[in-house]
Amino acid sequence: MKHTNISEKTETIIRQIFKPLPIFVSGMLMGSIVT
Image (cartoon, rainbow, N blue to C red; front, top):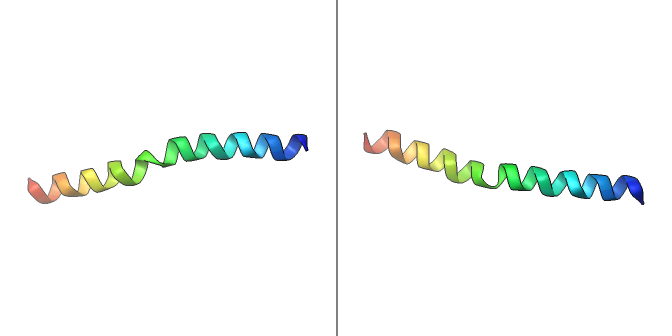
């Protein structure tokens, strides 16, 4: 149970880090297209 709890915590951390990435990348792409 402890191991799954740790993996769940790391999964939420990874999601918090990687969720804004597609938005950031799409924003970069849109910015490069506009300029």
